[in-house]
Length: 235
Image (cartoon, rainbow, N blue to C red):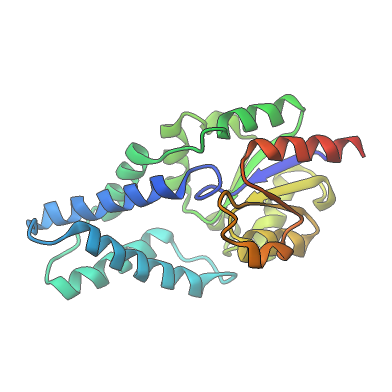
């Protein structure tokens, strides 16, 4: 065992924090449009539906800038209610992510513990490069990672093999020497297994039990990843 890679949203940062972030993005868009009469929480729900549907279609396919997907999702909602999305929507989005993103409570400790074991610790995520860099710096953990690999770098979205192979190449490790931690069984576990990496599913509430068989390990806390790694290193 020489390397551990993490997904980002839902794995290192909480989905609850991401929801708050997106609600504030919608609220700022409505403020800019002078549409305080609209319920930002209701429109946030519609925005999430549009965005999620578009990203489901992109799974495993060639990379399209996430900024374009998110902006189009917001424009579809805006069209229904007769207002315009600001030209700097992506800048608004990044600013809100920097302000409201929240790490899982044990994320920093887990990362530091893995680095103390002498492992390469990287991020492998479906993301635009400017988003992940800005967000990691805002969270104060940018310097913790030995490598950061995005779908923008790889040219494909997970679970396509290319993002996983590129992360391995950058770390200089073989697939069987690496572990991938994510929160999406269909994208994270399946993609990792395709290239021969072991996979860990973070499922705090056990909500994805029906897809557990796609993954090698299931954890409810990131601290458990450290114990899994220690066990693998002893073999």
